Length: 289
Image (cartoon, rainbow, N blue to C red; front, side, top):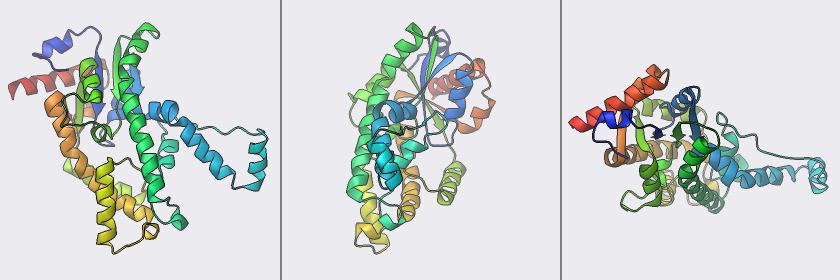
């Protein structure tokens, strides 16, 4: 959704905005601020982890619990209940389920299983993004919210086809919302990588990109067998590749379909008016370009 003038956005009675960008640029912070000012906050990652992958996550918990004799008997007799306590602020159950490929003695899973879970995530993310139109309606018709903000997570750019003008996810987003890219800085990208080295975590990769990087990693480090790959080693190496792979994709989405704001401007957003002013400025800059 694009506007001819900033005033068109300002006069839009019931606003709907999708924010996207790298981890740590302020998506969740901005969404929380607006939620506190009567905007409905839709988290794609939360929807993935509850509606579309909740059963997979809990089944994995149960699979691990079945390895413990004491818990095994309790599970088999329905004497205990295991669930995922996923929240907007804590998405660890989802990332833990995705896992890391490599040596099982170091906590890794087989590359085939890793790809299976990656595909589950891909399908779940696409479904959660396509749910946005439905949730815009729910937010207004059931809960009485006027405005809608979607925190799309970090992997939006991995599940859309930028070479297809009829891509269903992009069509859904542009038909129903304004796409707003929260642009990071080169320093922020380096900080993300440094932070990730200290605490590697599972990530989602676009399938062809993952296959290519898996081969490159093994070649670079002289590894012939998948099970000899250090899971954290690949996670750190792969994350750095992923960060710089995603930046031009984000930029393309913003240039074609939306607007861009700088991450350094996010801390100044304290309420709905600040957010609106930020978008009005971005639209104005786009019109002048």
